[in-house]
Image 1 (cartoon, rainbow over the protein chains, first blue to last red):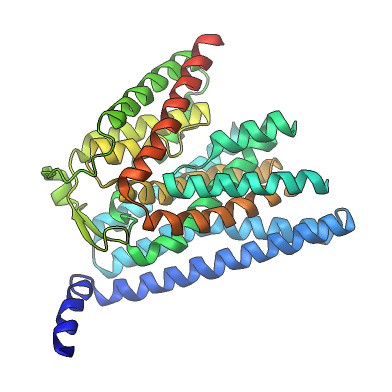
Image 2 (image 1 turned 180 degrees about the horizontal axis):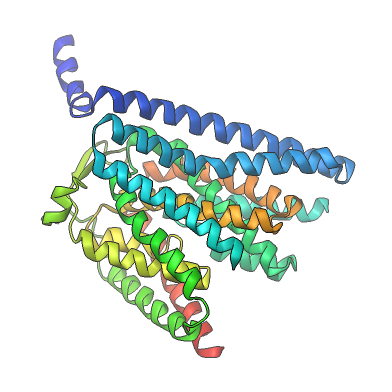
Length: 113
Length: 277
């Protein structure tokens, strides 16, 4: 019986490269910690702002929370790039690079415009 | 101040839930809400909305990771088109007619909304024959569907037309400040033949990436006002965590049925803006 259940569960583990699983786990952790951290800073900042009427440190805390959140999508692209390099999938590593460059270009043009 | 925050918070949570389920940024809810109800200046509202797109994206991602709903390869392939389009849009802002673009994209959205309406209810199992490019790029994927309690494997087709559509939707986003997710979901669902849930999850990833460069610009310009953006973003983040957990358990047909009224509404609003201006 127990052997049968093991056989049923197996297909999920196939196909995926061990490195990928590790990096995805890191990514999951980064995202989770990032969003909890950002959410906590925002919550404390907002409560402090409402209680004290907008002191500098409460505004600073909210801003820090927003910036933490802002960094997460870029982190995801970076981690994806690391995965592709690990897989020696140079084409997709290049795609990630193109996306990162386009983001940088967007910031540059946005500042001018 | 306290009442504003208290009213804003539940609206932001609702926007986050909707955004996470449907793969949208929720700008069509947040921007009118901030400007019309709370009389926040347009620039501040758009800046808050842009940061909250990232909140939707990240909040939803936390829930999706275990189900492998997000197709990172498709996301990276299409994101090149969107990013290039957004840059073109920013450069071409001076000499392109906004009126024509609004009508054009409105009609396009209306058409894909009509197509979704026609195929509604069908949790389609139609076979997709992958094109050469998608085989070469290995765009096919698989995810674990909690509603069906099984692994769903899928193929992807029309990868180059979809990239071209993404380029133009990127231009629309850069010029008109709209179209974060509302173009991406139909492009993946209808053009590429991806399952609807994989489409909204992948769209969710992409909108966060697209919004990142815009958000940096708004931050640098000082348009992101912590007192406005803070409550909105926190609410959207909480909403996205809830919405994504709901979405993984929903049937694809249900998610699609929720998407249809929103896409038709956006189509009408855009055509109206083009005609009335």
